[in-house]
Image (cartoon, rainbow, N blue to C red; front, side, top):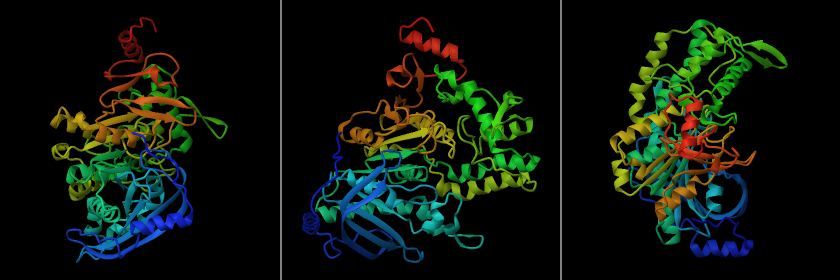
Length: 510
């Protein structure tokens, strides 16, 4: 599938006439009809030659773009909820016939100024919503001020908007506005989001299976009601045992883990590609030297206790832990606080799961309705994700497969070794995932692998569909043909694993 990537160029007068001809006016665009909602306002205006930096969630092809479009802003409320939700719909003059809903991140349901320009440049009619949440609070990952109606009282209406309601209404508003403006319904509708936006994508597939033909759900914040509070487990251990640990020491443990497990896939590249096969523990590295500001120090047993808490987590019903090459500094504070009660920690975790799981977990493995509607979904997760434990979506996908052994026919999950949260890290990052999803939906081209590139060193690799893993088979490790996708027994050591893969490819010597 090839998109028009060049910027649509014309004089301001020509663009203005084109917008006017299509009817970019509040008087010519029909107000959406949304069940249970009241439209408070609809504004439409021409925007010519707008230049802005933009990217797309989970695609990582960002840059500065100049776009001209009809900017439609819809404000609606749910009577009795005392909320006010703003949805932005951008309508390009050179339309590709598709609608693209864009998710948010953190505790925000949308980042319109960041994502919309890129989508419009690609020719999509695109939409984003603020969910009725306070933008200042929602964009900050640990600020949930908008979620309280008063002290200790949850605003359940706004929480439901955040969970899924604002997203499905954004889809309905966006598609209706698109149809009214172009006098033609979108041929296909897509959604993409990362982190909190990835969770929105899963919510759409699970709750509203006919909302989108294709969903790109990247690093989804699945079980957010569990992993967010449980992510404080390392801090709990620090405070409980009064163990201070420096950022340098934490990084020292990560560096030693990478040294120990890097070559499990057969190549030394600073990436742990097979985290399930990495059996090292933090205690294994006690006594090793690390450098901090030019001075050598020794990794301590007390520090190992904290680091292992990050890697192991608080148990299968709580925080599952990060992989060993992830940046763990976010989860390890620089100082201890007063001693904390372990009982309170687990009580709070159980409370969060019991009270918010039904609305926020987005972990229903039954995707039969989405499958029946012909939907297709692609997810990818960075194995060095420093914010969301990769095991969460991996466990969910296993549950999906247990309910439908052929779920890979419509839903595929890919691991991105060495990649951080949504982007970053040493590993190659998928840069054509949306294109491949569209090819799957519209042309039946199944994404057997996801194309990925690391722009810093031009490393290119094809990401493997779970449960297959990326394994080195020889050659230049910066080239995709040097790797294959294979099932891996996590009990294998690097030598036996590599020997097996080389034998598969007809090579008898290491």
